[in-house]
Length: 599
Ligand SMILES: Nc1ncnc2c1ncn2[C@@H]1O[C@H](COP(=O)(O)OP(=O)(O)OP(=O)(O)O)[C@@H](O)[C@H]1O
Ligand SMILES: [Mg+2]
Image 1 (cartoon, rainbow, N blue to C red):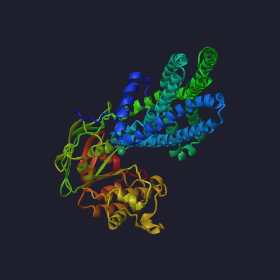
Image 2: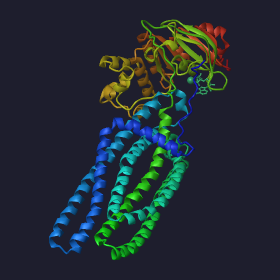
Image 3: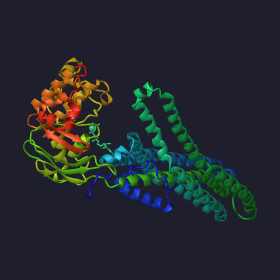
Image 4: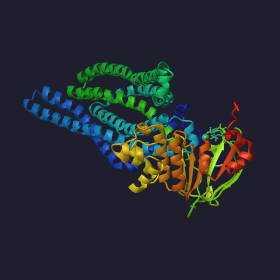
């Protein structure tokens, strides 16, 4: 069968292969192709600001010629005020555009990051169950956050930070050419060594970035795992060990940060050295040129100022280029995640109408991966509106059976049908509206009791919520709480007792108004009186639905019509409890009270 429950490869925290230049270009252009149409206004505004900044920077360098030739050289008093006003005007113009460049930087980065973070989260949540069992939730979230941010960073780096430096360099180079083409040509000698240096550093950054995301994810997964299990940590005195594990992760992260900083900063001394060398040569050349030709000191000053001013942009450009390599590594990883075909099974289009459906399994076999089958040739039929219990030893396949009923997994063999319709023909809504699972692992959302119950039935009236709470025997708790049904339950219900949380999850399930209810060990945390009250209420209030109780408790058997006994993934019996006690050894082994050895 094509739609086996193959578990997709987990999202790797980091790819091991450094990105090649071609790949970097491919991902970079794809990013721009996607972002530009959506954010063209912000990008256009950014480019406008960037052009303004670089233009005014060039003008500022050029204006030093006026200072030297018109003011100092000519000794003209009136010119001083004019030149001063020009310089102030140019500086104000530059600062105006610089301010908006910075603002646009933040705006663009934020909007691009958030957009991709939303897409990433939507991709993660659409994955099938196998994907999540291999990954820490914290790791997943770190990846969503980091990868999205890197996309924003890459866009800003390219559209803003790199462009501004390139245009500024061009403007300053124009000033240099205008003032002295020969010296300008000579200055170009700086370029090849800088290019060589930057390409070498880029290589180094790409290698470092391969494991960077993995380290950041480790920081969160170690931390959140320890905090989530804080009671276990304390009770087993694992504090020291936990702190040591966390410290190791932190130190690796810190070391990686240092390595990045060292590589990025190593452009600075080399560019400074090259610059110094050039300036020294210029002074010698210029003194000769001024003496032997009609060149003015002002021209040379403007040239030198432009060259000096080109320092910073050149330095920043090389640093940004090196950083872009890192961002693009993550962009590659982001596209890896986004392009992962959602491992969703195909759904049909049919829905279940009318009353409670029958549940039929025909020759169903299922195994997780390569292991022994968890279910083998299971055939059974549950009548519409019937109440059954599913019993069996631990590992017999009870949870697997109910997962299959909800299509969390598709069996490799056989057929499962609700109301005579193969599950694969039902639409996603059709299936999940019809079947309600009240799980053994209680999961509650941070919010009020009412909000949690309403997750079972969005838009439920107050009366419907109260009815669900009553069936789950929550009314006495609600009466005691100051805000009643609107009292908060805390993160994952931390303000409630184990039994209260379990009853709240029952109320949420009951509110759903499904046609088939599956209760997985729901009374395990309830006391005897509560259990009887809950069971009696469920049976009388949900009499129109098909009810399946997975249970280890003999007391539950009194509320059901028939009992399904599973043993080693096979049906060992399916009958009323009394008959099973006579005929089914597996059932007797589970529930027969041993005779009192005292007599
Ligand atoms: N995600 C999984 N991956 C691999 N094997 C699994 C997985 N879940 C369950 N199994 C195996 O499948 C078999 C049936 O497990 P299942 O959880 O259905 O048992 P169960 O009857 O619900 O047990 P319990 O009463 O302890 O909850 C077991 O052998 C178990 O080890
Ligand atoms: Mg189970």
